[in-house]
Length: 412
Image (cartoon, rainbow, N blue to C red; front, side, top):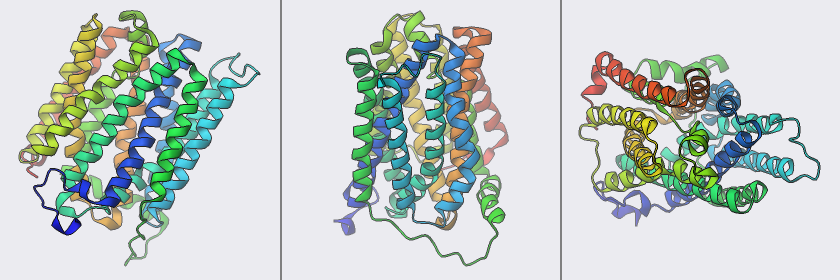
């Protein structure tokens, strides 16, 4: 079957069994993590009723994640990437077990505040720090180079479907059954992901032909990214756009104070961007947007910023849902093009380290962006802070367009 794969086949990557197993594992793990994020966000907000406490969720995960990212990339280029994945998923399972214990214990562990929850989030940041570069590097070894773009599209689609259903199911279970029951569901889905990952054939690390010190190895990925204008500009665009433009962190406040839809509505709001991304992923699988990749990347990040601003000024649940959905459509184009750029322009022997640098950029945009959103909402007010973020996203697009001409004219 694999010998008959054609480059222009929309389903080329899915015909490879190792890729199907990998995507199944990633779907289940992402589904569980997305469930957990919406549940723990609602749990912390229900304890604190404070915007800054939501921002601190991102900070609690970002600090450990960013602190070990370069070392994790170094390990991913030395050790079996599948083995690292298995250990990382197991660590996630331990963290969920702790959340179940904290939430359902006969002793009210949260009586003095949400500090224990932040402690668990810190541990998940460590697990994610090791999983992220290994996952990206392993993915690239499972499919032929000529269909990396197609594989990136389907990989993104699996992630987005999980990101749609995870928050929605998490919000529904949390609203109808309880927080503890939602964490139990998270545990079961993560365990299923672990089972699928055991079925993926691990690839031995590339044998290094040049002797490096640990410090040289750690900095190799950084130097490679900063010496490549296309990779640097693509991940910088994503980092700063999401850092300023993301509104996910403050969605519990919008759901509670602006739209008045509670935990159930919050689940659907969290799912809206991923629904848009699923629609766009299916479109890109059949009609790839790689011919004018650089132009499309800049246009879609600008569209993401505009959709964020319109979401901020909306007071109707359906309009807000639509704006989040559209933002997800634009964001998906950015995700697929950026992932394809990184895989195509990176040699396998440094894939783990380059992936770790990419993880730092994206981790900065997601987790530190959540902290920025929480602080901005605290200082500027809820709606002005999101408008500010969308406006800054547009400014970032203009800056990258001016100073990275190679990205603007890039064709894949």
